[in-house]
Length: 183
Image (cartoon, rainbow, N blue to C red; front, side, top):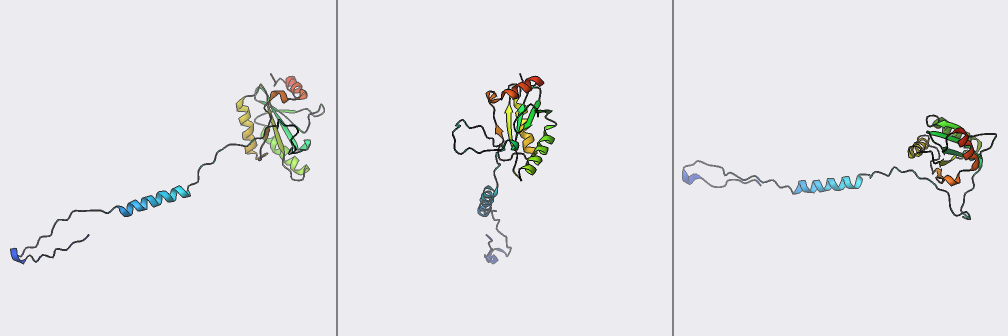
């Protein structure tokens, strides 16, 4: 808003004085820009995704027709014992091939090795991991083994978790008791 002094000024002695104008800033354009930027960032920002891992639990309905058959040689069963120990075996446990006992520092190499062997033997199929926590294991053990699965990108779809101690087989219990990693 510019204003010009159009007065002649010649009547009062010829000295021209400019009028003091009040300053006024129109903020309408800045408010419009602020709302435009807020709207832009709200629409283009992606929300954080939950960091949860999918797990599969055993079906209680034995007669379910949608059950998926797996070969035993494709599965790796991990038993979480006490004192931060893990017993694992491939396929079905047998007296000829007892489970391997390891700590959490060694399980990563075993996961990668078994994953590679199953891919080679099964024509590219992924390994299926079955995790069985026992009474002697802690929640930290469970989180640690889930972290190892995530780090090794093993069984990305969903590892099977059987957290009912009643589902432990007698051969698994006997072996773990003999090794001192079961209560």
